[in-house]
Image (tube, rainbow, N blue to C red; front, side, top):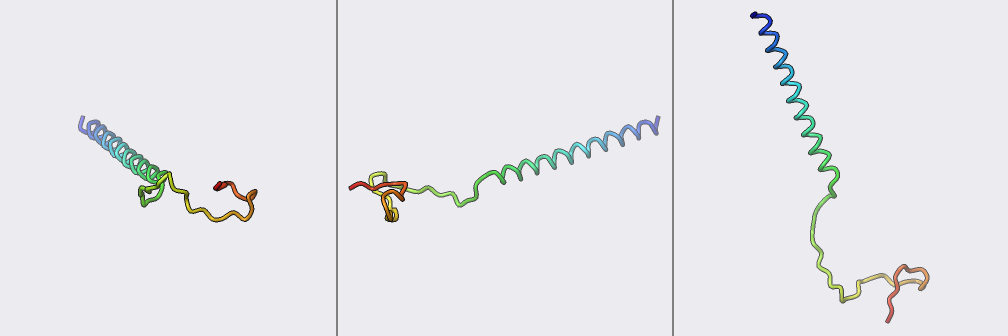
Length: 71
C-alpha cells in the first residue's frame, strides 16, 4: 500500500502544481491584455465654454473647409 499511496500523492501534487501554474499564467495574461486595451494617460478633464467660438485656422477658400464661421 505504501507505493500506491505515494504514487497517488505524487500525481495529485503534479496536478496541483500544473493547475496553479495555469491559474498564474492566465491571471498574468488577463492583466497584460487588459492594460494593453486601455488608452495611454495622462487622463485630464478639459474645461470648454460652448458659447465661445473655438480658435480655428482661417480657411483659404470657403469650399476648402469642413467648417464655416458665419458672421
